Amino acid sequence: MTKETTLKDDNWGWRARIGMFIVGGEAVPEAEWWAMAPDGVSVHAARVTAGSPWARWTADKSGVDLADDLQRGARQFAAMRLTAAVLGHTTSSVVGGKGWDEATASAISAVLATNPLGKDAVVTTNGLDTMAALRASNVKRPFLVLPPWFPDDTVKTAVRYYTDHGLAPVGHHRMDPGRKWRDLPPADLYGHGMGFEQEVEPLYAQIRATCPAAADGVLIGGTGFRCVAILETLEQDLARPVISANQASLWHCLRLSGVKTPVTGYGNLLRL
Image (tube, rainbow, N blue to C red; front, side):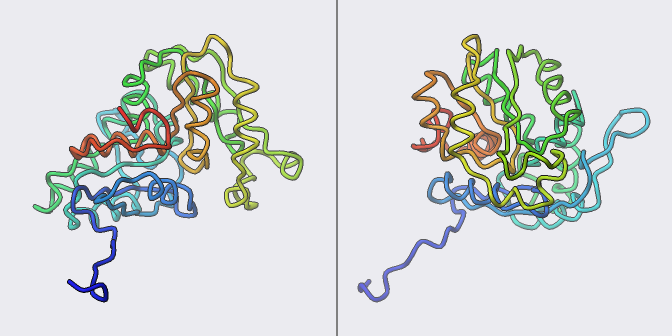
């Protein structure tokens, strides 16, 4: 093959092809996943505009009904011969509560299995991913860091979610968005554009300043929360594991897909 005909990398998922359900108006999950994904792994997004959680419990809590966007995306993913698919939405997991992740993953799996090309895809959720990542990192007393746009009730629900799953969070911190945004209620921040004006340096400084000594790790929740660029540095400075929502979901999906290539520069989790 001559220099003129040398093939270029086309990001084809010849080792793993992962589908991710993400918030319709967000750009962070795909950007962070593509930054971290090893060679031969492709990422494919289905966008969801439903309210949280993206699947509602049935009246008797025997299962969940998937939102229309989730159903549609799952049907499309079913034809793509995925190795794994993830519901990448922290809020849905924590609002859904204990048992919701498993019920929703099962419901999505059933849709994927309607097509022979989708029956082998393993389905997970951001809640399941973060729990798996904390266990793998031997973190039992995490410091929970949440986006500035999480309202008070969602913050409380997130703390309760991890407590209900057997962890003992030693504290939590909702990022201070800074003077430009401080007069807006948390729920209004994303709608006013903060999601596309996030800065990781203030987040780094706040986590360093507020992380309790008793915490044996840090969990940064929220798949729309830009943060993977600071994970490695935070781990070095805090001398403990630092896990983020997108990092945990990518790591879990890679392992579920049989890909064990270590990824450097984005925290120790991706080297486990």
